[in-house]
Length: 246
Ligand code: BTN
Image 1 (tube, protein in one colour):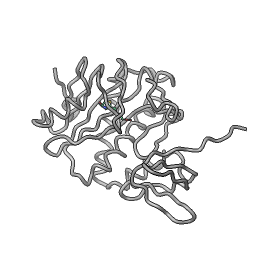
Image 2 (cartoon, protein in one colour):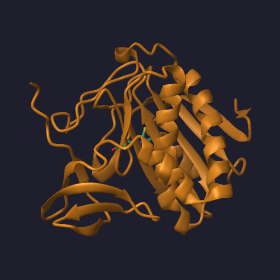
Image 3 (cartoon, protein in one colour):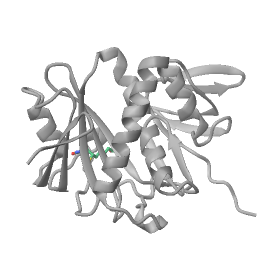
Image 4 (cartoon, helix red, strand yellow):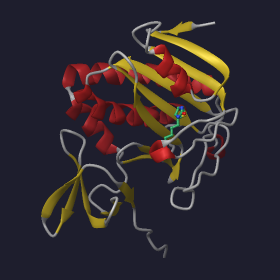
């Protein structure tokens, strides 16, 4: 049975192929302007770039669905990831949580969540979010991005506790974005950005660039300084050089 959490229509399923699949279907005839689909298990969860997302029970799989203009989609990625960080910190204010451009959330330097935005019908954007609550599935690229979960870090909460807290913070940040614009969100995001003003490597489809991470512009584009010149990076995978422990 569907429920409402604040202004969000919410339906929780025992099992789905992917919460994004269900949310995409619902966008043909939305049950409410803002709606969420969650599932206890996913059998064909998907990640970015054709990767899969393992759907073990105990973790959170949710799809937030809202109507959005194309020009605002870039902002949504920053809001979704900032709010993931704020929700983890709500449960443990001392947790070491950092943001990695464009949309990764790291807990103790490990990937804790994944975000996949897809376009639905009628101008809907589906923000598919997976959060490792109880277990940390090893993903194919685990060597590059080791994974963790909240339980491993001592944060013992359920997927629904996380969901309820997430929505409260999400509504607050959407309101900030509407009243103050993207730069207010960007500035909060940068406060938690890993590697700001430090050397980073960015893997692009056909090359790798190295430089100093100088933040993101008013459109969320990464600013990379190379030999005193700022280059804009529109898409890529960011890596941080390992520091040698003394
Ligand atoms: C990534 O590659 O990091 C993104 C992973 C996104 C996973 C979530 S889980 C809920 C939603 N349903 C899916 O099939 N994928 C997203």
